Amino acid sequence: MITRTHALPVVRQCQLLELARSAAYAQPRPASASDLALMRRIDELHLASPFAGARMLRDLLRREGHRIGRKRVRTVMARMGIEALYRKPNTSQRHPAHRVYPYLLRHLTITQSNHVWAADITYIPMTRGFVYLFAVLDWASRRVLAWRLSNTLTTDFCMEAVQEALTSYGTPDIFNTDQGCQFTSQEFTGLLNDHGIQISMDGTGCWRDNVFVERLWRSVKYEEVYLRAYDSISAARQGVGRYLTFYNQHRPHRALDGKTPEQVYCDNLATRPTAA
Image (cartoon, rainbow, N blue to C red; front, side, top):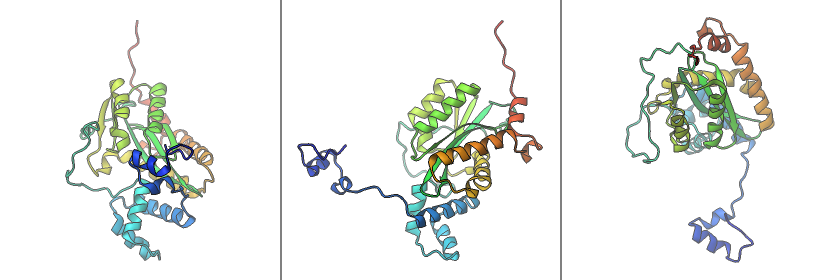
């Protein structure tokens, strides 16, 4: 956006673009080793206590010997894309282009595969840096239908995974997410509407509304991510892909009476009528 070889000086270009002049000279810096270690620990604490906010996490970290303040914890949480989960008052008006849909799964009996799909994003630490993992999950069988990694919290990698799931497994009746900006965007909801899928969204701060995805994140992190030290995004992609294949096809699931998600997904597919 800023061109240093342009005839206009950089200061004037910043004025025209309504950017701070310092933004043109700031160079992006990777997170330090201490910051990455802190982010990983905050992620572990958040996974164990999703209700903990910046103040509680600060106190927990101080008990472990970290010299840290609430503002730094809050900054790190924002960078990771996580926040404390609790009911909040509706004190602000959302952008009219970002419609929030009601939660459709309460008191709904879900036993058939492809009845309800759910999706979410989580933070994945690496040796240097971090990435975000997005996954689409079949609610009844817990099978992971598609997933993607990205180093930015954008909408495009989420839509790629959803499109892959739709192409490979057909369309669900309902698709459930939280109220993250990636999922309320017109691009994401438009993709679902174009396929005639009902859209369901968790209540504000109600992590239990999407509890099966939260349990998937716990399994992925404790059984794979926290045991590794990925050196690159490609290594993270290989490791996560290897684990999710194991999770789908080989890992017995206690909630599924010891069956695998793959087995339950195939056993509970509703038969669709075929044309004569």
